[in-house]
Image (cartoon, rainbow, N blue to C red; front, side, top):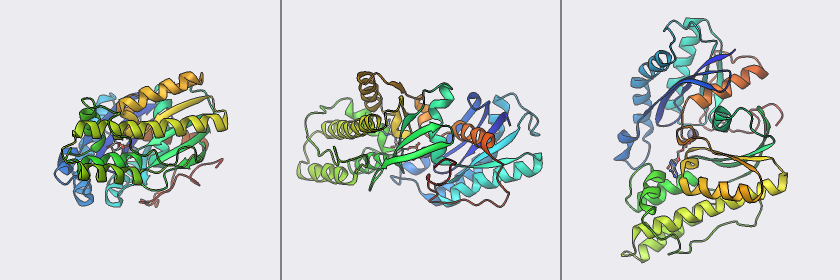
Amino acid sequence: MNRILGIETSCDETAAAVVEGGNRILSSIVSSQVLLHADFGGVVPEIASRSHLEAITYVIDEALTKAGLAKNGDGIDAIAVTNGPGLIGALMVGLAAAKALSLAWDKPFVAVNHLEGHLYASLLEDANIEMPAIVELVSGGHTLLILMSAPGQYQILGSTVDDAAGEAFDKVARFLHLGYPGGPAIEKIAAEGNDKSVQFPRPMLGQGLDMSFSGLKTAVVNFAKKNPTFPVADIAASFQRCVADVLVSKAVAALELTGAKSICLAGGVGANTLLREELKKAASHLHIKCYLPSKSMCTDNAAMIAAAGYYRLQAGPPSLLNVSAVANLSLSGTFEGN
Ligand code: KG4
Ligand code: ZN
């Protein structure tokens, strides 16, 4: 099971990739629906499903072509596909495509947890990550601190008790009329702002490894309502600084608690430059190796799904064709060693 076709359709990116040996990316195609959802300030599930259906075959075709492979499945050993968590209709499009190819090509397929996929972003770019590693997974739907002892062996150490960090970026951006997705929009305008101009609360600091971002989002919204002429760039910069401070301080706490040998960033918020710089600095103070996947590997893609599928197939049998899409599939319990 060496060469894997990965398929990812859990949210608003239609993606396919071919990955060899768990970390050699032969192709990675991502077709973004961002423009379709931008007018609505967030992902519209019905539009996402329809758009995946329109794009999926072209995206798979392009991934095979870029990898130098034929359309008949020759050279592909297995298909890996996200079956949750995510939007149910969106997940079903990718899952149906993977099952159809599995039948047509007579190749095994494996269902992969989207969050498990994100954990492999660093391994895709450096196969020799020092383990145990702490993976800080910060996306639009999840914010988790995970101890990864080996591929397939994970322990969740902490998580957000309310909103995900990416969700806070998206909600604050929507309130400030900065557009969707919020993370890149806030990052852009924050570059012109003073990040010390407003002291927003840093929730749950010094209180274990769980996090909270909902109160921070409310504090930003209330501040902007009370100070309508305050520069938006300053608010955005102060908010971004606050999220980065919390995420870095929680990652440091997890490193100190576990004695892990390295820290990896994962998920869409991992594309944030301030967070990347601050995490790198903190890791260097602790003399710990910091792995920052390229920004395109932080956000949703199918190479990470193919990599996760590769390691899964090393450890166990392929999935059965009756496997379902599960909107709220959780990370715990999906892995051996948990
Ligand atoms: O991992 P991802 O692509 O999809 C999910 O699985 O959720 O993450 C998307 C999230 C969105 O909330 C988006 O605003 C955020 O990642 N994001 C960023 C940046 N790029 C994407 N947040 C902060 N800074 C960025 N540069
Ligand atoms: Zn994701």
